[in-house]
Image (cartoon, rainbow, N blue to C red):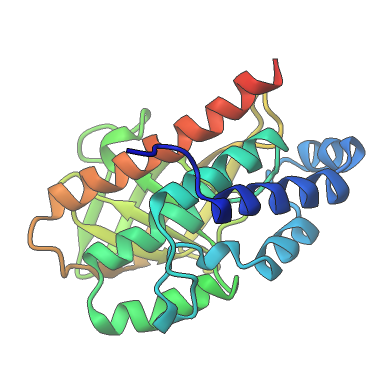
Length: 238
């Protein structure tokens, strides 16, 4: 049994690695780190042109329809290039979450926009929000209030996908008066820690999953898989 990469996957890695080496000099990285969002609009547009936001999205929704191993190849290349891009949440976890928990109409509404780079989704879990206390998160009449910390890829997110303590997932538009994003710099200036504070924010439920807790656990596993590839790239730099 062959556990190596295919020729197409090696080609994908080479194309992305060469692109980052050419388009992301150290001065650009420093500028992104200084601005505190962990996001470069020029780099984002380039990644959109390469088709990365649609990597895991089915072809009928405007994507490439590739698999999680291909996503790991991309994660490794982005990590090796220290690319300040909202990859794991917006291009991996969010599309897979919609495919698992969104109904047909939601998939048709969201997946083409993700693939086209029109929206970027940060992602967070109520149970992983370190500063959250019992009772701080309130959902009433379809409106959500509370503070979620540790939002992955939240610095330049147009929306956030939040998993509540019971496993149900909701999408919130961050470009409203009811949502406020706060980013704090870390030792890696290209990857800030983001908190979203909601005040009676309208939410869209992703409620097509038969077992929402299992669906949430699967999304966490997707994160671990992508993060391990990202970490491998740093080991290779040493």
